[in-house]
Length: 204
Image (cartoon, rainbow, N blue to C red; front, side, top):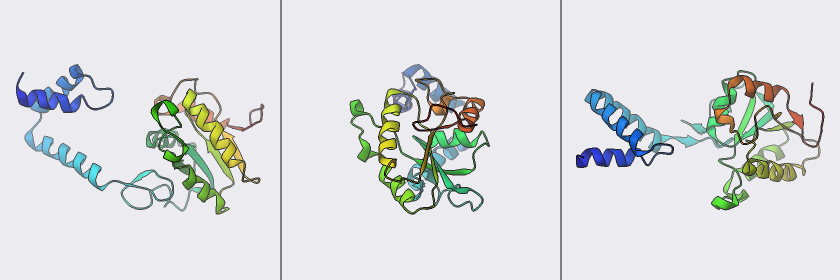
């Protein structure tokens, strides 16, 4: 194998979910592209990595200090949906069933991977709620073991705000599934039929 090809395959295979066989197909596809197309692709990737910011309010990815959702005056600012990753925001937005704000934790609590509460943007969330504008927090956390641990921890931390309504999305999303990979109908159903933490009956 060419050294240049081997180097390209090695770099592609560093991406999550990309094995060497898939990396080889991607590298060969690049050879079939026009040089200018490849330059545009690499320039876009480089600009994304160097210029992307995190929203100072919700921790979502943004081109500016505030993401488009947080800067939209038409969003319901009394409701905040807490998610693990940016991909979860995109999944929920695609349902067009939710008009509140978001808060991106940046992951879940996972002792096995050395991720504790202090590694997530939990304090930023608590600071937002302490300002008094937020009336409901929706916990849209994946139903993995780590997700359930994070949900339990957040529920305890949010209990310090007695007037706050804390709900969780209905478990229309199967145990072990991740929100990012759920279909839009399932996510929409889960959002509409969320339950208050501690209640056994679904909200109508």
